[in-house]
Image 1 (cartoon, one colour):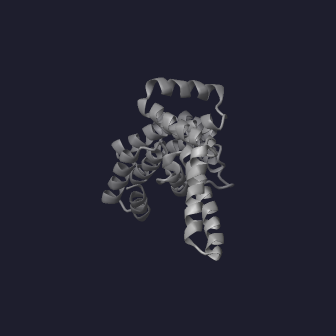
Image 2 (cartoon, helix red, strand yellow):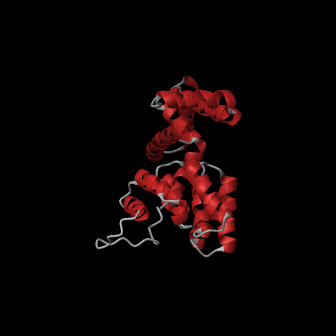
Image 3 (spheres, one colour):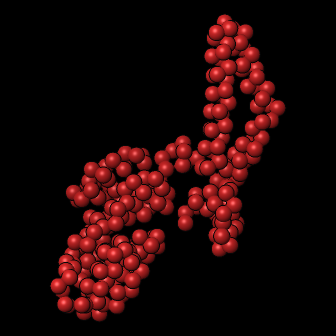
Length: 245
């Protein structure tokens, strides 16, 4: 779970005991996280006080000023605008509470969801008539049936002498689907370093992982490497790069 999700769950009072421990630890050790927490807490307090005398007075003055300068027909319209103004102010404050990055800037999590799609099995053909029930076949059967933990277990069980280079990439995919970003990232980096199959694809998925982690710098780095050196998802990478610049 990323830091923005933790903040959201804190303010919605839905943290689990384990998440509460992580949350408290971040408050004590991460200055940026604490700063964002204080920012959103203050905004929440503003929302709770939106009916305060100061806000009411400003809105009432706004309405009176319009009423004195317009005809009765326009006055009706001005009251409507006043109400719109009040609603807009409330919405703006609510937007701030749920996170500046989510509403006023690009939502990285939404971009991740829009661009992520698990990579299909293109390396191991599975047929019903296949009697060769190897561990690798079992792994890809689990992968295709979306039993990703079983797929990982089977990938790990394949003897070293029988492991094909593409297995690292598919195991990374399984970890990613289970939202184990740390292990997925490690394996995608291994694919790239060892120049194995699916190097271009690994750059793409690394970019998405960094995007999900709100790491703009490394997201841009991976996208630029992909665009400069490969054709895989080049147009999507350019589009995504434009959206986070």
